[in-house]
Structure formats: structure tokens, C-alpha cells
Amino acid sequence: MQRPRGTETPLPPEIVMTPTPVCLACGRTADATPLIALTYRAGAYWICPQHLPVLIHDPARLVGQLPGAEGLRPADHHD
Image (cartoon, rainbow, N blue to C red; front, top):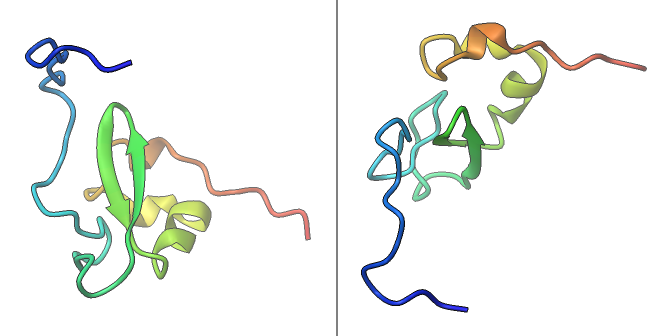
């Protein structure tokens, strides 16, 4: 069901979106590499496949690039 035009709920101002999607770790665009979209703390971010393991295994390396990264825990390994 589509809502009538003009009745869309505006995005809250705290939602962070970049005009051109770029990897939050390396800054490459979708023209250079595939990007994976993610949402966190009401923000929209992108990360490339090369840096997805950083997000999973060492999120502290994203401090300053991903708000709240200092509070993320690395994945537990059950090898």
C-alpha cells in the first residue's frame, strides 16, 4: 500500500547519511568496490567486503569512523 505523496514521515535529523555511499573504513565508493549497507544507532553506513572482518573481529579500529565503535565487542571465536 502506497501512501499519498507528501505524507512521508521525514527522517529524524540524527540519522547520518552520506550523499555518496563510501566505505566507512577506507573511503572507497561503489565505483571502486562493492559496498554493504548497515544501520547502527539510527545511522546509515557502508562498508566494503575487505573491511567487514574489521567490523566483526576488531571494531575498535573503527573508532572515529563509526560512532559508538568503542562500545562494540569483537566476535567470540569458537574454533
